[in-house]
Amino acid sequence: MIRAEVVLLLFLTAVLWGVTPVLEKVGLGRTDPLTGVTIRSVAVTAALLLYLFFAGKLGAVFQAGPKTIIIFSVTGIVAGLFGMITYFTALKKGATSQIVPIAATYPLITAFLSVLILGERVTPLRVIGTALIVLGIWFVKG
Image 1 (cartoon, rainbow, N blue to C red):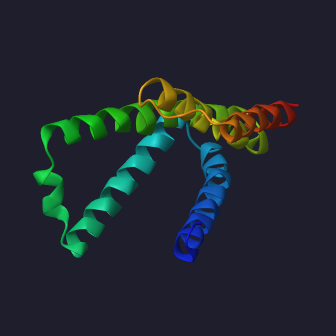
Image 2: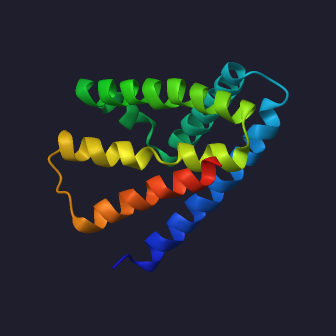
């Protein structure tokens, strides 16, 4: 069972992630996706550096091992740059109420790769959940 604290954090995450695309859609009405991603990334970087500084954890960034730095650098470029550019481009061109749910199907790819690369088990409930996600995409795309 998930603890109450975790549920609260997940609810807060959902609210924050749910509000953001609406604001991003408004912002994309005034600029192109690459500029939007750049502004967003600079703001996040500045906020992170300030947070780490005041939390006394800035040194941890410089103590991470090379493998950790490479992994997070690659995933940052793949998801934080390329993924955000494709997402912002879709968001600029399409309806937010369609784009966001379809973009949020990335767990399908994660589930598939988790089985393939990490050797995680496929269970009947996961197969049903995956089928429901695909069905949801079909409903939303209309």
